[in-house]
Image 1 (cartoon, helix red, strand yellow):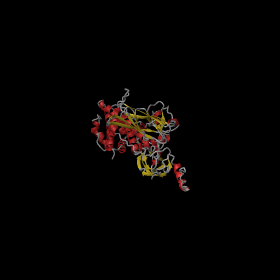
Image 2 (cartoon, protein in one colour):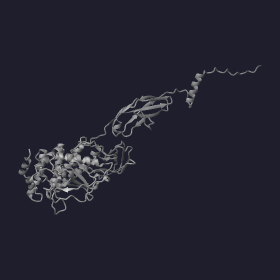
Image 3 (spheres, protein in one colour):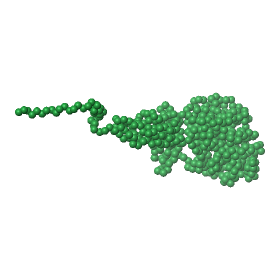
Image 4 (cartoon, helix red, strand yellow):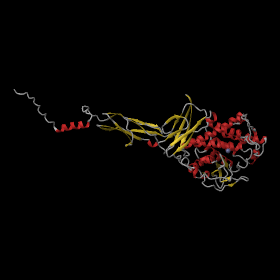
Amino acid sequence: MGQLQVRKPAAPTPIIPPLRFVIMFLTTACPSGDGASPQVAPAISVQPQSQSVTAPATATFNVTATGTAPLSYQWNKNGSAISGTPSATYTTPATTSADNGAQYTATVTNIAGSVTSNPATLIVRAESTIVALDYSRELFGTAPTLRPTVQSVDVSTHTVVIQGEDSRAPSIPFTFSLGDGSVTNGFFPQSHLYTDASRNYVVRVTAHYSLNETDSADVVVRFVPPQITATSFPAAVTVTIPAAVPALGSRQAGYTPPSNLQPFDDSFFGPSLPRSTAEYVLSQAANVEADILENDIEQVNGDWRQVVLRDPAASGAYSIWYSTPIAVGAAASFFQGTPGYSSLFHEMGHNLSLNAPASFRYGGRIDGNANAIFSEAVAQMFQHSVAYELVNNASKYGLPSDLTLEMANSARVSAQVVRGFYDTYIGQGKPFATWNDPSTTVDETEGTFMTVARQFMIHAEQAKAYIGPLTRTMRLLRTFNPTLAAKYAPGTNSAAADVFRSTLMVAALSYGFKQDLRAEFRALNFGIDDATFTTLYNSIP
Ligand SMILES: [Zn+2]
């Protein structure tokens, strides 16, 4: 019998080569062996959405895709790949105006192919450029206790240290919004590393005194100079900070400029404030001050240019109104860190107002123990009015928001000083004085002249106008003449002179605000002679 032979089946019909090729391809491409599943190329199921942000906030784009895993992602900006963007979500760095209109796409890739999303457009709204300044809080409100400062800016490592204090010492951590989109909570000092050091930042520090009581303050972190868009000003008002001390003559017998003045050499300037920027800002301030005086200023060699010089012995700044050229002496610190804008506007206010009116300048005619009620009150009104004008009309003067924020901070601090002297004046029983007694070490007139400045600012706040009322106030004060100078009697401490000086200032503010302020000032213990008031008030149309 024959052995059952199990015959091998016949060899299968050979697969036609093209099919075999396909199978081999799939096998090679699917090392997992799951050759049964179809391979699906990626498709975008949710497109990235266009969006708008306000610089420097970041923007986040998302894409959702289907297709055979794994999917890989690549984000593109204006068609160019952005490195390091391997996920379905992409968050931009802090935005700037340069990013406005940028188009972002995502390319999704898998084994079966790739697809690129529709573009999403990023709209970057302008960084908030409006720094508004009023003094309502300083004059009416509770004084802030939070005082942040920029302790250091390391331009090589981009590391910044924010220092500060708050006399209320809250136990809740402060919030630091660092201006580049990052926010952190903690206490002073706070250190932060900025990715982009090609621009400046405004850091907002918020104190939390309780769940519903907070306060905030802003400081500027400056890596680059302020970006001035220069607008013209008359050459006559130019302020320079010369690199060499010019010869200073004197226009007032018995007055000699200090002999120890030094220049602010280049070491006092740097990226935070170039010399030319400081000169520009001071010139624009002088421009405003000359306008307030309606250019009725005694000329010095044909104009009233000013120079700022360094006094190594000084801790503050002072007016040298009588020199040729007119000068300001200032301590070495004035252009370092946050510039002392408000004090410089104050001294320039002395300089120009003491050289006004052109026909009979105040300077040298009221100097003496009764000088302050005119000169210091006016300088205070000038410094706060000029800062108000420059900050609130920044674009007109070509000033960027970081610089006007520094200026506003400087002016707010000096406004608190005005308020402080006023509070002391009231608290001490309104001790009116226009006479600085040379036999005492204190200045008895501080409360009085600061109260004049405070009442000016109160009415200016109510009117929401500083320059117009101050221009009118100075217009009345510029009626100054030999007859008025004799009544002012700066070297005499008499009741009549005291009342005249008081009446002059009250008449000037009344004229300035077109409002009879006699009752208001009488309540503040100012003596006023009605006949003199009426004569002064009606002395100009
Ligand atoms: Zn002064």
